[in-house]
Image 1: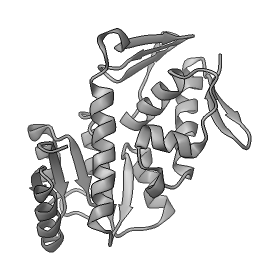
Image 2 (image 1 turned 90 degrees about the horizontal axis):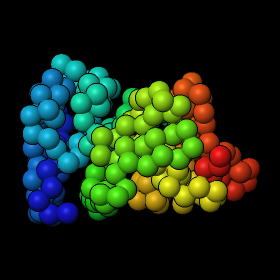
Image 3 (image 1 turned 60 degrees about the horizontal axis):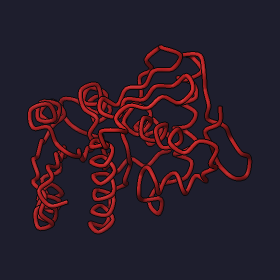
Amino acid sequence: MAGERILLIEDDTELQEITVGFLRKEGYEVIVASDGEEGIRLAEETNPTLILLDLMLPKADGFEVCRVVRTKSVAPIMIVSAKNSEMDKMLSLGIGADDYIEKPFSMPELLARIKSHIRRYTSFSKPKDEDKRIVVGEVEIDRLSYRVWVCGKEIELTTREFQLLDYLASHPSRVFSKGQLLDAVWGCAEYIDENTITVYIGRIREKMVGAGACYIKTVWGAGYKWEM
């Protein structure tokens, strides 16, 4: 993981110093933005491997930053916020965030999540040549560009939605529990609510059905599978 670039968008200077010092000791390059507008600019200019994003920011709040950045980047976005309502969490995931960690948090937990997200991001970003593009039924998946077509119509997916769909499509007929999907796609089931999977599956299904086909099936009491 050493050498990966992390963009920290946080206006609390004390937390900035603690987080930057810790992550740099772990070998990461860390860039800091103190407001939302600066965060959006640096996200585009520096091409970070992962973004740590506070929600309560001056000039542009974290929700707006997440929305804008997600239109231009597939890098993992981790929300780091003192706001702890389920609505804030679901809204963050809904606009493209990949994870949500509440303040205060432990640095070892933050590091574990960062490592997991970067590992998943880099592995999905560098598929083998023969696996760059696959077709499963009426679904075509391009792993290099993170694009998906259903019945010939392209559907817009967030990074994590793409990875979840791709994982299920790559293992047809196999049933996965929510915990197994979190381990496989997020890489850190220990820290993430299993209801996150329900939210993501619901959004993917809605988009697929709108385009004409959906192969993600619920196996009640067990999990989900891809079945044609």
